[in-house]
Length: 201
Image (cartoon, rainbow, N blue to C red):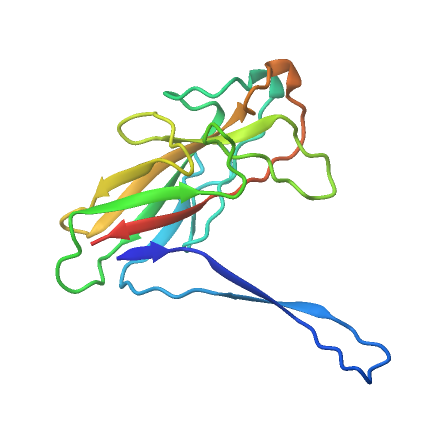
């Protein structure tokens, strides 16, 4: 089965008749989700480095990285996280499922704002100053520190045979945007986003 964690549908409805002198048009956005599985997904920010403590969310979560000096942000390293690394977990809990849930769960990340190197671009759109030329990278934090290339890599984790839970432990960190030097980094706020799917049998 596949657990799909975000489905957004949008529609634009407008109608004008020939006898109407003036009309108003607008948009209606519909948000929903369907799942065919009996397993539950959660996201946990472990709070290791951000000072806010561990926080658990339902399937859509938030990870808060610590405030970090721009001078320590370096180029993406495929085998180690960057500055201000913050661990988080994505869990697939099938403890309420009847029968066998399978052996492994497979996690894939994808994002409309992923960079060519598989990191995530800054998408801050608020009224304050946004950081420039700095991305967010995702790395493993379980048995290796290898980068998880958003849009490409698929990670496999076994289900615990007792709890029927598969846990993906990852870490997010600041890295320089693709092709940028340390002197290009500019201070400010950073928002980014990845979506994910988990396949399991």
